[in-house]
Length: 423
Image (cartoon, rainbow, N blue to C red; front, side, top):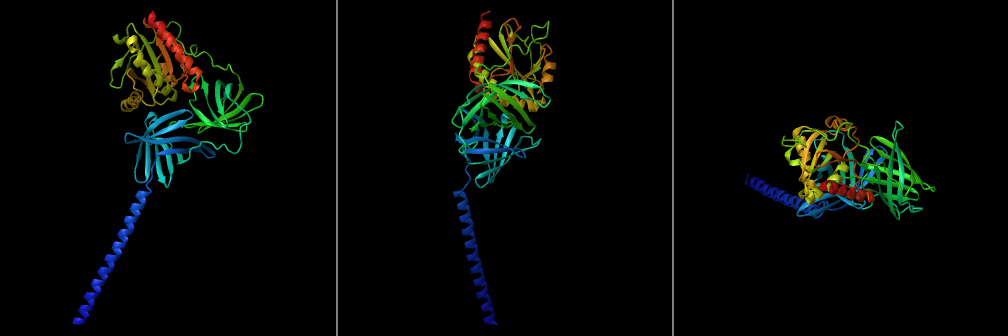
């Protein structure tokens, strides 16, 4: 009996010892895995090539950079010469999130090795997400297989044709260096901003993405100086044709939007984000030149306008100039409007008044500003003289991507303000 008890005790001690050894080995393996994971932890910093899977058979490439400054990581979209700030990057164990506040969107990625797989979606999770994947690559379109047959740089008269047969005259601006092609399409309603791509032989591809909706153009330059192509997107395709013309230009943007007969000014009273009503009749605006910008935080060309006019106001407000931004947003619900308009103000350092004028619809603009004979484009800039009368209306905005057209606008804008201030 004693021998049996002794053997049982020895067996128990041995089993405990074996378990202890196994636990130690297991703990060491787990610690090694943790250490290995730390050594190979995902680092988001660097250059990325994204692919937006718009629909079956249509994938739009774009580039972005994630960099760190003052302890914060930010994503920047790269298109041609522009680096456009997307938003702050938040990383968890297995995911990456980027709030694209400018357009009330976000990028949500799962980290898969050294690849990102996820979607572009609305911050409130409404609507249909757009599938996005990204890899650590620095090119946009491959170019090595076929050199360009010629230099197709220059300006072109370009006509876009809608499905109903309606034609829209635009200006195509292209700059080519080897296989690399950059450019934009200048429309009455505003330009396509910075497009970047390649020329392979005589065929070209261009794309752009800053967090709103990706754009993609493809086409062919022909030997006679003409071109043909199409813009592709989630809503289908739109063909275009063009002819090289060094003097290509749009209709006069100062003659497209105007007042109805019998009107000299605009009469409105819209609330700011705190509910305070603002009107041109307010004492603040009397005997001053007032600039009205019909805008929206969702509008890429309005972003370009704000980038210009916000710092311009800081430099010129002491001269007797005021600005009112009439915001037409996706929703006029107070909480939403306050959120997006505050973001807009903070991003561009806006010191002038912003008001909630209505929803982002051209018909709504016409109804809320009945003195306008027509409304064609976000943004539209209206200049009021010291007597309170409309002196000038500019339809659309020629952003920095348009080069000389942007420079011409800035010159004309300053000349008009200078002239009115002297009266």
